[in-house]
Image (cartoon, rainbow, N blue to C red):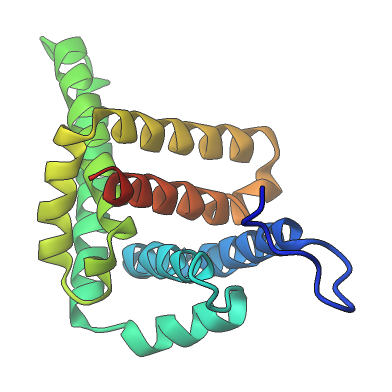
Length: 197
């Protein structure tokens, strides 16, 4: 592991522990920024951008996160948040209709879950793309293509989401830290895609 940097003078922990602390602080900042649901996509996209920058020796953590989020919040980000909110409401309504005992409810519920998982996959992969900082439609188009072409990466994204949800379910306070590792996983999958091509 010749590429790993050694400890700086006065540094208590090594660089890996520093990255871990940065991921947790970015996760907490992202969770707080997602509380108004309209800012969810921008918050997760910003987390991915900050963690991508950490791999390029740029500062990471809550400070750089909030600085970038303040600079980038614009109408396109709020439109992406509106699409997220509308999708969540539509998904909840579909599941409520399926639970009402209508004919074909099981098939309808299964289709709704598959479509919802596909939409979530594309949305999460779009957040990890650098284009999401300035052009959401381009990021979504590219993420849709990536979701089909890179089946392994798509499986990793779904596994990361399941792991984050399981951690939050097992210990509720972890829900406020889970966006950091999730953003790191999304960024790693996107970097895997770019380095593999």
